[in-house]
Image (cartoon, rainbow, N blue to C red; front, side, top):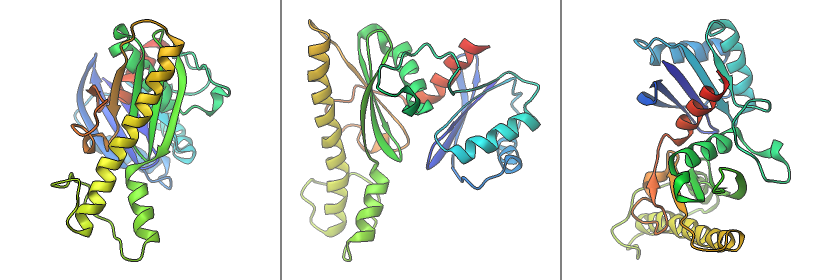
Length: 258
């Protein structure tokens, strides 16, 4: 079985694949202070009962990646391991000014989106995490670039920290857009506001893709990330929800490199 690990700034998502089937997944907080031994104890406890025969990792947190390398060297040295970094075969061309700036998670998301939806044409991956990433995938599976915006949770935290009479609220869909109290007003501005932000960016990306690829164009918009469920059913442009897109991408990269 293949253990896939996606280390994000806020959460780490782990999944175990049996062939192409994701049989189990977990979401835990990311703590950059965790040592390689602490990571091993956590991962071993989560995957108990699963025989791990391969490992695929991507990380946007340098300190966690360093400790993961130590964990792999000590505890996983006898199994095929793939860490998504320069030199690893992904099959994804990065058509941007500085490819070294592109996070590993955005690369594997591009591969997964093209593999799952590439027969329909270009794709836009909307990853709702610490930041909200919109990544644009060409019909050939190339990474064309995208847009980065502050994430939903950190925006709410910043507002609560800077506004004396406002506070953090539960992130749920309010009864109406017109909030009748402070809590509902904050929920409305957050949930509907971010959905509108995504829709506006997607529509502008549509316009640019139409210029780049003249003719009839079908673009798939795929939502992923831990906060994606907040805007599903509200956003008017999201076509698909794939919560484990990054893990699928890690499996695909691992298959290309082993």
